[in-house]
Length: 157
Image (cartoon, rainbow, N blue to C red; front, side):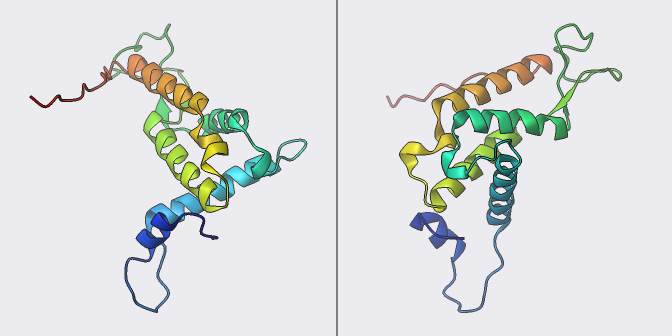
C-alpha cells in the first residue's frame, strides 16, 4: 500500500521491530474493501477508474452490496414490520446492515486518501453518502422496531 496519510501508518507500525508485521484486522479489511470497490468499478461498462469515481458510484456500490446482506429488513406491508423479534419467517429482503455499511465507508474513506486521493475530492466523505447512511439507519430501525434516538450532547454546567 502506498502511504498517503501518516497517522494510520504510524498506527500500523506500532512497534519498532524490524521484523515484518502482519497487518491488523482493520488493515486487512480495508485492503479487501478497497480491492472490492476497485473490482466493482472495473466491471462497470465502461470501466471507471477509482480516481474518476464519484459519490454516485459509491451509492451504486452500496446498493449492489445489498444482495449479499444478511439482515432481514421488513417492508411496510409485512406483518412483522416494526417488530424487533418476529415470530416467524417472511419474504422480506435481506440487506446489508447499517452498521456494516457505516464501517465499510469509514474504511474506504481512509483507503482513498492513503492511495493518494485528496480529502476534498473523497467520494466516500460526500454529504450524499452521509444522508444515504442516515436514511438506511432510520429505515432499518423502523422496520425492526428499534428506536434510534440521537444522543444530545451534554452541556457543562
